[in-house]
Length: 330
Length: 258
Image 1: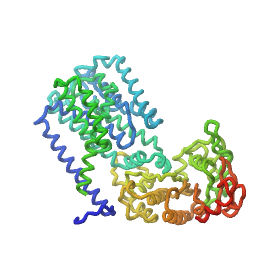
Image 2: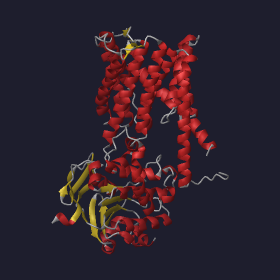
Image 3: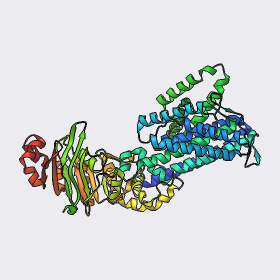
Image 4: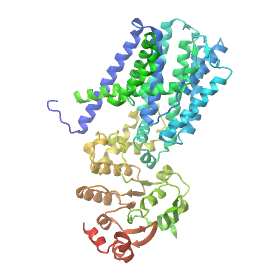
């Protein structure tokens, strides 16, 4: 304690890991408390939007940050979750929202399995291009398909009653449901990252040929990661549709795939809270700027922030903070 | 007849767009030997390596493991048979600790590697075995250090520990001493000798002093074909090898003493 040395002994390593775990736990509790009381200070619909996009970004981060796979087509999964849930809830008034969301998520999982199986055969930029091409196919499919409302999208999706009991037209009730969904999604991602599967995934990200030479069928692991990520992105999309009672083409557009990359990179790829911070920042800026005279410049401003981030702090906001903490509290 | 060889190739050939990198190579590797593959740059050593471990598909020819053809198997299946390779540049998982590096090799046996719903703690029973392996290569003191922070020589030792975790029957080492200082070379040579007990080792090596100290049998490749085969004394005496290998007669002997 008195003289901290830089040599890393096993004891120091373990102590450091334990301290990091404790910090992380404290931060989680603080954030959850904040999320529970947040509707007292902020407009619940805005908070729900942040949470939906945060879940979307966390799902994307699972793939890029922990499997090293850059998908440029995640909008397809967000939109699929949204459209399927929106269509079901609009067409079958008896259906409860949680069932609609589950089916929407399952649809994204199925689509993820299909796209993943095709895309993981290629690496790096080719992987990204394949996902983009497939997502564009979905975009045009959703324009043409009869159940999506084409350019107009699906409007007036009923929120309904959760389990047939809790009326979700109340924004506060809706908020806590969204928070619960987010926490579940976030927990799944955390567990995945810190699981035996997560270890292999990390190994593949670090050195793929070596993972092969240890006997791992790396494509199968990548596929599972891809499907998990797609499913959680679908869950985010499905939830968003229930919140806004709307499923639109914006979600399927490649802009959306780009936006989630932006959120993740600005927040900090491969970090626990990075995508959360990134999503919060981007959604806040979009909302604030849309109301200001700078409304038409949203994309330009976001682009400038992105460039600034990439140039000055590459590991993102949270990555940069982590580095500072590590330097000062060794 | 071929049963006595643990690994064998017959007419192994690999062409890249008309350029034949490996041309009809017949290798016979005896169980328990340390076998070296040497040759000048561009002789096709690493290509042979990649063919043997299925990182490249052969154009023609067969590969046999204990007499059974493995030519059509995939790279990860080869590893499961017990043929485990290393790489020319040290292949470690940088942002994982030394212990995790070894453990990730051990954990496949648990059969829970797809279980994304299980805690990492379910891997802790493997820690003891991982520590033993780290001790074996002299890395116990850095078990919890991130691998990127380790010096090069220790990364290579970690790679050996990770390979040993799979209990391979055949270890394929691609230039294990490349880029190392003399002290590290000695350490790795001692390590290879120690871990080769009860195993077969096939290594690509440039450092002829290492080859002369370690290897039971040597195959010399030149321009993708086998030029000579035998023990160190007979191979280094072969005039064809002397000419092809270093261009001048003296250098083989010189190299051996450095």
